[in-house]
Image 1 (cartoon, helix red, strand yellow):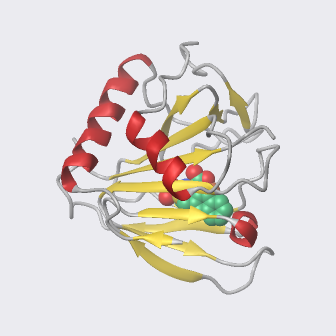
Image 2: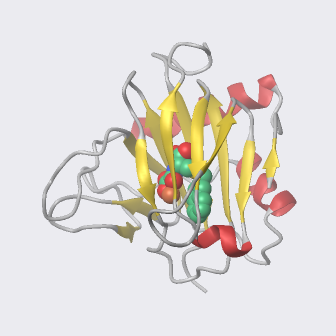
Length: 196
Ligand code: MD3
Ligand code: FE
């Protein structure tokens, strides 16, 4: 489900303020791929009792603390808890909210499936802020056709049912089109249920 402009401009600004406050104690860090140590192009942080992290040594995982400074993740902002209750249809709250900042012109995210959660039946709820992005979603197997959807600031996407297990990624950021994010780019907030 795509909810275009779910959040008003004032709410979008409040979400950016919440991110700015959160990254005081849990700063954006450069995630790296398991084993190879290749950096991802986005920088990341999290809100919630668990955060999704990755580095060369530890691989993809959920952790209750920041991988660089050991700080607990800041609590989920109320606007996001309310969003989850409104659109997820899931009886339990999300433990994790990953913050992806597409902070440079060339940032993207290759096609992948989210499968580090024990609970794969809960939907994923995503919020786009700042510059638009071309989001791509395919099927449940690698290599098939994909559909592109341009996502704008304030849009919400809910991936439930079969779509939860689909390949997806971000092929392009329309860098410099929005003034919402300080220093520019796009911020994506992705809420997930981790444990059954
Ligand atoms: C479709 N993030 O962090 S959010 C990710 O815009 C991720 O930053 C993208 O993919 C971003 O893992 C896309 C939308 C999204 C999130 C999870 C999904 C789409 C999904 C899981 C299954 C299918
Ligand atoms: Fe993903």
